[in-house]
Image (tube, rainbow, N blue to C red; front, side):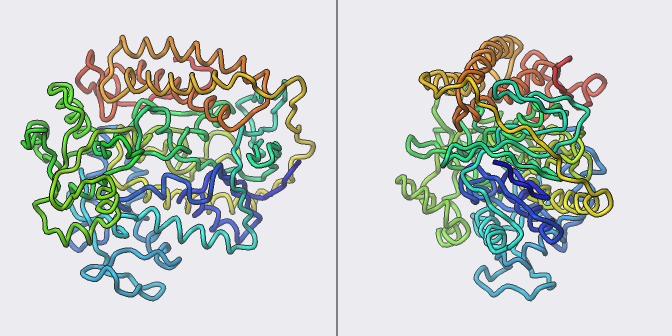
Length: 550
């Protein structure tokens, strides 16, 4: 089955939905998302969106905070573009009906379109000023709900839920028993997509394709990310020949709830921004030993500090304590966190919350220019899937949603311009998916076993603190697993779990190779053999192209 569309958007987070709404005025749009429209990392984002609105804040301060967090690897031009465009993108969200907290009156009515509200601004680690625009502690959910409502009401946007992309299609795509192979110098003209309800594989023929599939957290055993975060866009782009970079820089959020029944539940950095203090099991604060900013240090510093404390003490968790603040304030500022913790028997107004680090955000990804373009013609990547140069070696808290909004706008403007000034015909005679010679799998254990093994050795060997020996072990294991997956993939019909396994294996390999390559410690990459930053040799991006030649 072939579906023709002017714009194909793969992913339904803030980046993909914003892009879709902007380009829909100029052509037909198909949004492919592998679960429901709101099943994305965006929905899980609690803290907010970093942007300059405060009278004591400035673009220069936000730029400097971002550069400092990025530890020498940020692209300054990109940082300036994102920071300076952020306020206008937030105003657009307000015009779409997103209800951010208003200063001193969270329940007040929203301003008229075009007006600038006096926003209630929070502060998070690494920020020198209050600049986090938020909707209580459920910012992502509020934004996603508004965007999805507009998408579903738009007559030029078709939403394909429960559809998972398998591979990109380029002009040189050829089929060999279901395996897509490509040549790098090429143009993207769509994707093969599995309808999970009917098990039918559809061929999407598109003028422009956007990857906005989110992050890679499920590559690790412990993560704040939802189950959909399997790095699909990065893996597909790499297989198609696009350049990826900086995959070693995996951000581990310092504070995820530690409880046997609490899966993937993040304790927002905003808790520390409002005065929360990290303590050990004896109730003693410890962040003063690691950074002058104490509990408001950047995430890489805090995560390593907690990892060090746990290794020294043998404890299962540390504790985040905000119980010294007024109980009414806590319930009002963090209603979602308060309710969730209470459901596990933890009253954060009276006692500290047990927390541990978990994989949270990928700072690397598919390399793009300042318009969101990859090095494959008519293929764009934005959001966490992309490596734009904003985050460098460590993302500043709450910069991700701002980046997604700004790049969605830049990419949409460029894609519309291409359609109007360089129109293309739909690619004729795209090869349909070929399942000849394949059967339904009778070896599901291969998928589940390898899925579990990858996530465990990535956590143990390629986690917060790394070593050459651990990385070598990880590389040996992933090479064997990739061979097993390739043999399996050729012989059986594709299913969602196999597609995701194939993708996390590719992403794991990319992370491992980048981590082995970088012989220093910088930002989110810490190797005990090379504990210091080396600007003379390593103040540069780690670039990977298929096949890996580094």
